[in-house]
Amino acid sequence: MREPLLSLRGLRVSYGGIQAVKGIDLEVAEGELVALIGANGAGKTTTLKAITGGQPLAAGEIRYRGESIAGAAPHALVARGLAMVPEGRGVFARMTITENLLMGAFTRRDRAGIAADIERMFATFPRLKERARQYAGTMSGGEQQMLAMARALMSRPALLLLDEPSMGLSPIMVEKVFEVVREVSAQGTTVLLVEQNARLALQAAHRGYVMDSGLVTLHGEAAQLLEDPKVRAAYLGEQGGAGELAG
Image (cartoon, rainbow, N blue to C red; front, side, top):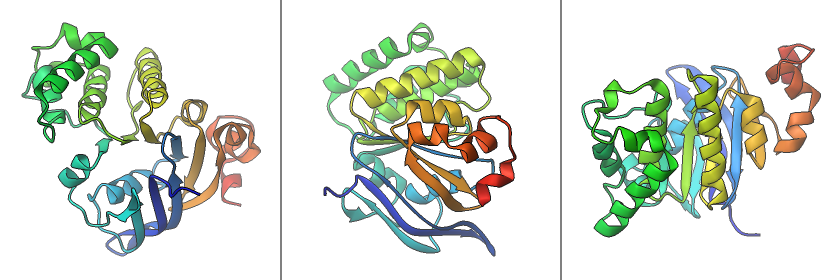
């Protein structure tokens, strides 16, 4: 079997004396869209921070394209094809939309390709084209999320990490964000999606992992997880108790 594009083995992450991630295994094959779902505080964002070098490991291994990337600097990972859209978007508020997109391509030197990709982002996100010279800090939350995704895609990532892309957005914007997520996946970019909206995440994904209190409690094909009684009770608002998932 081919080695997965990304694999975590025995990953442990601590904040002081608190274990936020307690020895999880997770893998993402090339071309997959994998969802990591769970309640707030389950350890999902901490897992992404560990992958991208924003949080040191207490134990375990992170391999990307067959090589260990534990401790690698975030900018070095971007150059190797791994990009992240952080929770809270993190756009450059005092830069224009176009300048933000150019920042996403900071590792590249192909000017013609960069210009073509900016036009491609404007085609994917027409709202950004309308506001190309507007400062990012003056945009709505939904528009900023579109910009954050477009900026990450400007690096032409092999693996895109998305942290809670639907958080705080209107239903119309959430629908647009997930439309883009599915489109990006269909175009061949591998995606690891962290998302509290379990239904939308699993409907978009090929496979899924469920995190609870720093542990992976369930994993499998996304369609099967959507039908799992424990997932339905805990995360899809159907009859049953959230505590069932821990059993």
